[in-house]
Length: 287
Image (cartoon, rainbow, N blue to C red; front, side, top):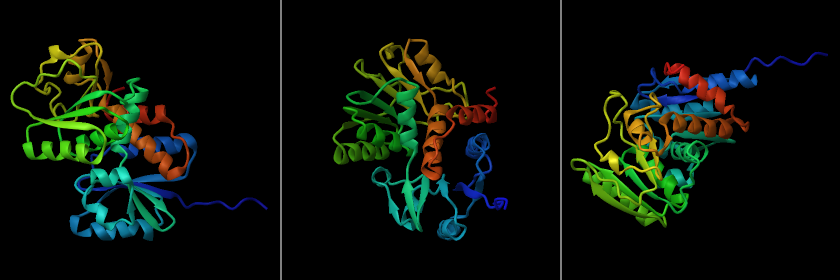
């Protein structure tokens, strides 16, 4: 007797508003195709008033996992059965894994950055001094993971005093890493003993000719310079750092690796990293 054909696909996706320009599914679909897996990734736009029902729908449709994007990364926490310790520390979730009937919140953004730093930047943050530009959601995820990975100190540089102080206090109070806040006024001077500089602001996302106002001559060839902007792997910020000999880690790296981590969480299978990276590069018109 021939084997029974299974026409039922495993479903994952992303919930947010808007999601029409979110390219995450491109890399997942490319990975599923490469590995011959009957899985599909859906972009699902959800109104705020429908968020709780949408989360319940993950169970109702027997979905295998879900990404959460803006503006629901914080709101979604109250509708989950449990949240991983690092995601709880950040207060935000960007991925849900399904464990039996339980929905578990994870945050792979910071983990994706960390893997990019280690794999592409050939740098372990343990014992390193970090300057973090920005204090928003991406900065929060990155700061927590850097602290948990052993960064000795993190200087949060931000225009908003409230957000900057909150993030530095979180790191100082909840981890063993020393953190401080510097309010960003004018051109920021990077301390000479800095090991890692991270642009976690949106500067450079919409205008490739923009760059954060820092003294780029303070960057040295002993530093690692990282950007979170995914749609341009060669931002002006990175080019300035590279021109001074710094090792570079681009934002596409973080986006790919957070997806790679989600892929393994959901499927139990190692992700085809190069296939996922190539699919995103094509989506951004980079090849």
